[in-house]
Length: 229
Image (cartoon, rainbow, N blue to C red; front, side, top):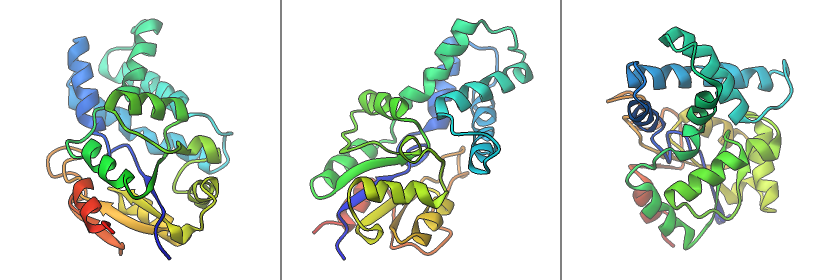
């Protein structure tokens, strides 16, 4: 069955969260090691979502979890006295993460043939702001806010397929994380891995898939070439 829609992981796959946060930390002049701060903030991401996935708490938007995680790590970096207004402003850095160099051109090419949507744990407002910041053009914004749950729960992927009135096999999940692709494949989606070997720092990302995938691409432009009709 022909692929009609592409769903994209965003953090790490389309945007450089680590480099973007580190640049913002430096711009603000915070007296911390910028990359270490970015890593610490991101390290709290999965545990915070797991509380929702496990049912220990109800669904809350990722903006809320990011803010809770920021409050958690600030004292560790000697910034426990940061004013509320500064905390609110810093939390919005996630809304303006910068795209990897190939992302905008790759999405433009892919959109010539396929419906495109983020399948992200980021909430709709976050995804909309990031799209405006980078010039992404989506046909819809799918993911956690639509499913009221977080990947890799099966319902998140299936809610995206249902939103486009498509069968799972008509959709392809595109991600730089093998765990995301494994979960999508388990409910019937096609999968494409994008190499982001420097996501967590030089040589600390996935240079290739760690599970079977339908396509292993060097970047989004390579994916567009491989999916060309």
